[in-house]
Length: 220
Length: 392
Image 1 (spheres, rainbow over the protein chains, first blue to last red):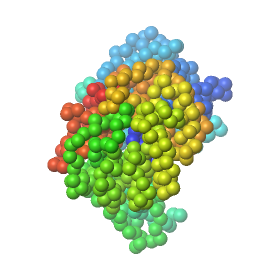
Image 2 (cartoon, one colour; image 1 turned 90 degrees about the vertical axis):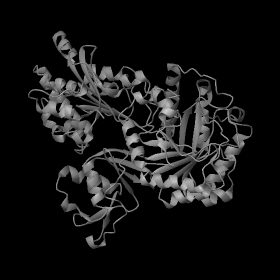
Image 3 (tube, each protein chain N blue to C red; image 1 turned 30 degrees about the horizontal axis):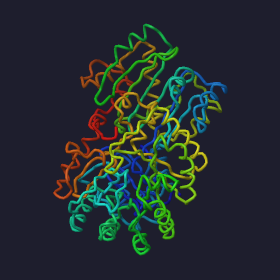
Image 4 (cartoon, rainbow over the protein chains, first blue to last red; image 1 turned 180 degrees about the horizontal axis):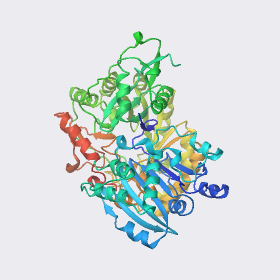
C-alpha cells in the first residue's frame, strides 16, 4: 500500500514542492552539511541527504541552489511539484560522457523529456516526467545500494524516518542503479526512457533499472 | 493492539480515482491520495472488520499505522460489531475532483473595481435545478463545495442550497462580500458551513474602499466579528500588488489581529470594474520582495495558514521546473482537483478558463460518463491545454 500525499485543510489552490538531494558516492562532512543547509532554515542535512519541502506557495529554493547542491554536495535529486517530477543525476564532467549523454536528449508529451546540462564541474542528466505511481518499484530503496555503505550513527539517523513507502526513496534507489550503469558505459536505461517518451517499442535486452525507470514514467 | 479489529471510519469519505483513490476527513478537511492497493484495502474495510494480524507485509502495516493515527480506520471491539459504512465498492465515475467552486449566481449588489466576474442579469437556476446539480456532485463524490458568485446571499434560497449540500455530507465554504449577512442568517448557517471567506485589501480604510466600494472596510470588520461570534471560522482574501508592498506586512499583521487563521493572497486579474484594463507589471524583484515579506510573516505567525492563488504561485516558483515555467503554467490545478460550475450549470476547469473551448459540459443535461471522461482526459494534457489561460 502507498500514500502519495496527505493534504491539510481547505484550499482553493493547493500544492507543495518537495526536493530530496542524495549523495550516493560519499558522506558529507559536517562542514558540507552546514553549507547544504544554508538554503533553508528548516533544512536538516545528514551525511547522505537533505530535503526541502515548501507548503507555502510563495517560496521555493533560491535561484542557483539546486545547481550548487548537485555540483558540490549531492549527485541525485528527486523533486515533485503538482505531480510533475524532476529526477537528476550528476556526474563528474567528462567530455566523452557529455557527448554520449547528449544523444539521449529527447522530448516527451507536454514538456516532459530528457535534458543534459553542464553545471560547474558536473554534467547533469535531467528527466522531467509524470509518474505512474503504481509502477514505482520499492525494491530499490534498500540502503545497501549506496556505495561504501557501512552502518553508522549518521546513516541510522537518516533512515529512521524512512517508512518504506516513500516514492522519493524508491526513485533514489533506481537513479543510483542507473548512474552505476552509465558509469559502466551502459546506457540502456536512457534508451528505454527515450523510447518511452518517443512512444517507440522497447527493443533488446533491458537491465532491471532500465525497466524500472522507463516503466514508471506515465505518458497520460 | 494486535487483537483489535478495525474498520474504515464511518465519518470519513472514500472515492476511487484513476490513480488509486482519495480519502477525505470532513472534520479537518484533510485529504489523502492513495494507490490502488490502499484503496482496495480501505474499501474492503468499509464492509468488514480488518484485523492487524491479517496484514502480512511490513510496508503495509506501516501504512496501516498512518491510517490508524489519522483515524482513517478506527478500532471496533469485535468483528461482529463492524458497522459497514456507505461506500460503494463499484464506483462508476473514478475521478480526482475534490472540490467545486459553485457560482450559484453571477449577479451582485456591489460593483467592486477588482472583481473578475462580469455581473450578469441572466436568470439564475431554480432551486430544483441547483439540487439536480448537487446530486451530480454527489455522484462524482465531490468532498467540498465553495459557494460563490456574484454575491451568493442574493439568492433567497442560499440556506436551502446549503442545507441540501450539508445533508449530502459535502463540506461547504462560502465567499461573500458580506453586505447581506446578519446574525439570523449566520445562526442558521453555522452548523452547515466550514468557513466564510471575506476580503480585505488593505488595513488602510481608504485604500481598501478604493479597491472595493465605499463603506466596505468597516462593514467587513463588523462582519468578521459577527461571524466569529457564531464560532464560524473566517478566511480572508487579500489582494496584493507591487505598489502595496510598502504596507503589506502591516496589513497581514492587522488581519492576524482580527483572529483570522487563513489568508489567501490573490493577484489582481482582469476585472469588470474600473480596473478592468489596468495592467500591473510584475517584475522579478516584486516577487522577491513579496517572498521576503511572506517569509517574515510566516516566521512570526506559523499557525496562520497562508496560501496564494495560482497566478502568484506559478511565477514565484521561478526556480522551479524549467520546462513548465517556460510555459508559465506551474500553479494551475484547475480541472485536476477542482472545477468551477457557473450560474447556468456550465462546467469549467477554472474561473479564468471560461472560454468556449474550455467548457467541459453542463451539469443540467449531464451525461456524467462524458463529463468524467473529459475531466480525466484534461489531466493528461497539462500544460498545453491551458496555455491560453487569461491569467498566465
